[in-house]
Image (tube, rainbow, N blue to C red):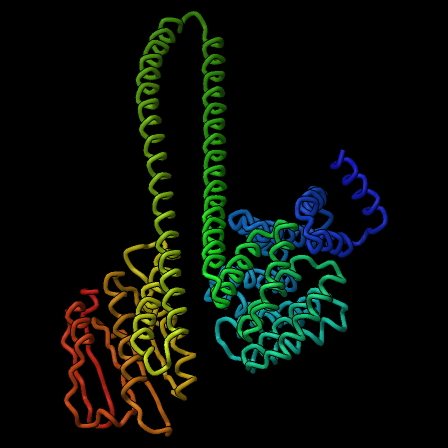
Length: 566
């Protein structure tokens, strides 16, 4: 009955709004209201009509957005791919631009920043050669500012692009654009530690989302709001807001928000000294995380099973067609060829029996291999998730202990934390990488550098960083990361004694047959001194390299290694 009423409502709405933009706008309104199942029915119903190519593209992207919000990334990616096929057949630059912006957000949401950057770069090229409509530019500038916040960490650029998005969204009365551009501006206030202004902006955004029934947006605002309250040490207010937000996320079945708010509550209770409550919410958070991973795994198995059943049906249909063809040929033969036909039939029967026997045996073996493959994938996935959770738990425990330790006595803990974070970063790269034997050392070392950016800013150290994309063994990658981490720590602790220009320069280059590793700082404490770097020496022994240290003009560490050895 519910689906009948909804379908009737869709029919009345279709009579009232004939333009394709109105159809898309109504579907988007259902998404904003978090009525994802209704939105999916609505989009699929109109997709079967296919009024125009442009509308078909927007409907496909709309369905992809729904699956993205449902955390079903496989289906989301499939519908984005279908939209791209239609776009390529139309040569519509507006929708090609819109597709790249949507894909940038799809990857950014999953913290795949390199892929997000590539799609925004393609959109930028289109913008240089074509006039793009303002309704698409709003989303482009908004996602550009988001990438500068989370990946480049450049607040000036974040603010610049967010203001452009805000201006356009106001002129278009784009509520979603207005919300997210303002959300990025609040992030700038947060980064600049202007917490009062940030909190005020986020409270206004929560009210705005509530007034306009923007359910997903309201949860996003609450996520930032509770985080900033914690940073500003307003723990009681943050606890009230997090509990309220958690209840709201549960009510609207926003599972990912539920995980984040549960973790926030755990963090607040820990800071308030209520370890019992903190432990209780930590257990809840881990259960939710496991549930999330199992949910994704169940979807994966279901899709595999459906594909397997479909393949079996197709094989059966094909076999039936062959049998019908053979019977027709048998009926059409004349008497003079009867004996030949009988002989051929007998031979065919023997061959068919042999084929059936080997096919059945091969099918049984393949089924067993398929089952073992799924088991291995499941065990590997579970192991990765457990390792990641344990590493994050170790980092949380060290960070919490670091906050309780006086500044003069916490240096050893900071060293341990940096090394654990380097190992955790390598694990994340391995998990994302299809090839578990090798990784791109460039992306890994860039993430190691990002983990030190806050420390560099605190000590007024400029970092010059140049790493070429080189594929190396995962065994050696860990030692590269730990070596760079140890060199960073030594420079921060020992290299600089004055407040003058402090610089660190790191280069990793690939020659014809070698990798060249060069690290230097302009600190004065090591000049003309003989240094005994025990941990650096141990790491170099693991890498099987001979290194050089020069202290004539500061500190210079370098080595070269054969590419075939890594």
